[in-house]
Amino acid sequence: MKQYFPDISPSETLWIAKFIGALAGSAISLAYVLPAGKREAAIRFMTGLTAGLVFGFPTGLWIADRFSFGNRLNDFEVALMGAAFSSLVIWTALGFALRFLEWNFSQKRPRHEDEGNDL
Figure 1 (cartoon, rainbow, N blue to C red):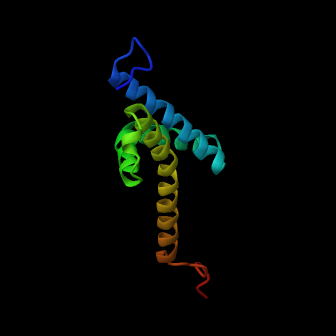
Figure 2 (figure 1 turned 180 degrees about the vertical axis):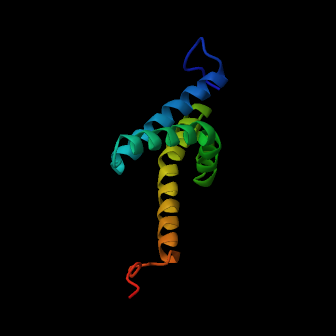
């Protein structure tokens, strides 16, 4: 692997790439759909950062393999791309899941509009 930073090992370089990609993906996800408040923004940012660090390199390998350009990228670029993609996509997937669960529970919950009106 080509050394971008002379005093840093290749494994540390991958961690740097994943961190930068995760930060970029989290920032884009916050700008793409604005959060309702500070708490939601912090949760979304930390979720994206964690997903990018954990799933960054495997996701980058999957993307590079899927689109057949893996032989043109080095490990740094693969990790950066995967971390940004993971970070950006995780909140979208969680958002859809949460909305589905909310909708599902609201459909199953009985509505007691006439409670207390027993005459």
